[in-house]
Image (cartoon, one colour):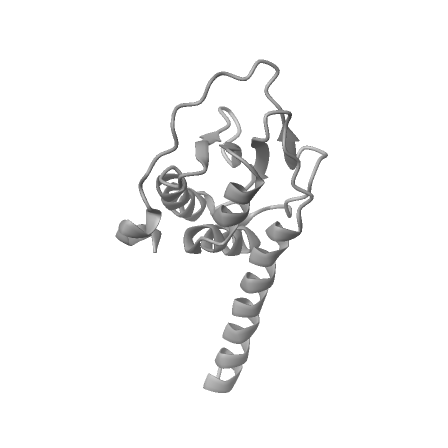
Length: 154
């Protein structure tokens, strides 16, 4: 492949990543009665993409937990289903989730989804679901760490 074709292909991949990272911002974000935003997201990963999926997600877990608006951010591998994962996250409010979507590690995560998910994320129907706690527990004070103070989160 000549350099011009490589350049065009690279530009296309970059544009796709930018567009996909922006698609998360178009969600109809639903806050629960306390104002918190909680999500459960199911992922099916393409065969052979598990290692990259886990590596990029681990960065997101580390960095997201440092955000002042984060209550919890946990990704789980489904036992007995080697390419299935579940994310459970809670944000103090919609603004905290909006801020999370603007972080570089979140944008890298969405770009990785384009390459490695067996099916695109969709709201509802076993994909992404907003949920509300039936008996919310009191929350500790927000963390005060700025994720940009950690090199891998920039």
